Image (cartoon, rainbow over all chains, first blue to last red; front, side, top):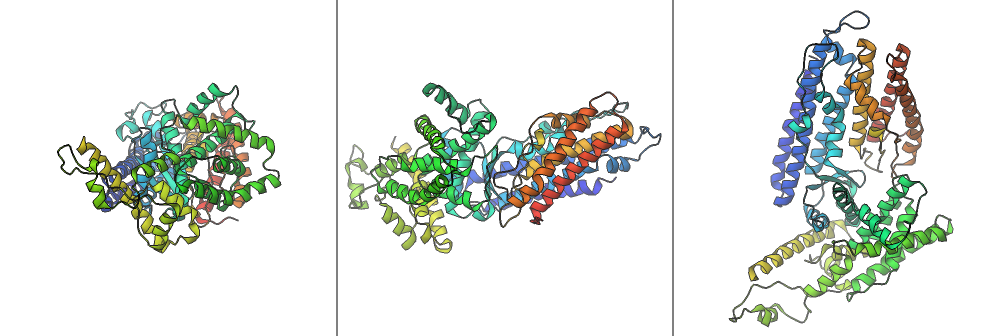
Length: 475
Length: 133
């Protein structure tokens, strides 16, 4: 049969997914390992769907059709049916199978630091979302569900298998729901730009993608972030401010701006710099799905000009640095007429609505993170010895309790020097750390600093786990 | 055109790979099914499940969209041709909805669907290899 070599090839690809699973043994984090195993199983099921479509519905159909007289009065062999009728569909099935195979490799050998998972998964977890979310290399930042990535390209094959019989033939093929037989579990794949996977300056863009994931996931329950925002706006103003006269485009553009806002509000001021760099380096065009760049940059700029209340100097310095970088771009948009006073008015109104709306969102803001950092840190004058002798470190009987380890509170310059000059990893909130890093990007050197930053995220995670354990023990 | 909804020609400087490849795979899959359905109609006179899937997928009104991050040569090269080819296929499908479409109608639909498939395949190849002409 003509399809035999292809089916054998797909068998090989299915076996290869197991080989890739074995490579996951090198990942030291169980949770990430589990998410990747589930994702690979989904791809494997995608390959099994292709396999079963080719072996069952298409092959059997070809045999049945070979027994039916053509309009020209002759008969085709099963191979002729495959070649003459189904060639393009078989080609696309082959292409999709290869795509799945490549995707699995890009997941397992992604070049994306595993530590990034821990940091970014905080966003969906703050909404109670615990589905697998995995990162893969690609050529732009994009979020897709497993369904969109794996099941959607197979939709015609799945439909054909559900209703495989040939009109005019008495020979029956049992219908099968391939999606039930080989289910594709829920979850998300976030694609990172291949060459940027290990560039911390582009990691903030992943916060945008994380909020898109949340928006999609909550959307399944009819409560997407966008829906929640629209509902909130109705309580504040009579009409939603319009940034595009076409309804669908307005909705899409608004979504992008809302995601940017939530990302900058959560990540911090230096998101603006990452966004500017990303938009400038990519050949960017407005489409019905993505607004003009000036809309997104101006919306980020508004965050940088808003008054802030933080006892730490980190916010104000980062805000100032980002503003200095964004300001010339905004001035250019104004000079070139891309941004007029009316557009700025609408974007400002939207920004103000988003600020109020964000108070209903559970994800910690950058200001909250700084507040926590200050609350959980210790003045540098107190030594560890002092710390364990403090009253709160002792139980009612005067015995030593387990206590949360407190780092000294560091200023913007101290964090910068510790990372860039001394090469010491810091167990502080990665959002805070990354803001300082991106604000000093001119001093960043991948060879020297990348590992320090990744280790900092690891240390922060260990510290968080330790602190939570202490809470439980002391209770 | 549901499954041709988002043909993102995402090419990033150095990598020259298709980003939303799954979306392009979806298009190939629908068009491949369409070619099978049309040929079943032409060769056997059967209005099959394949044809039904194809007609349903193509019936939605969404247009091929080009990603905001597509570089101009690729975008300029393919945006118009995809749009034209898509329009032709949609027009062919309208003519196919009669009880017994003529051989000419079926032949034209096969030709136009193959053309759209070919443009997508070329775009895919171009994006993967980076050979933007």
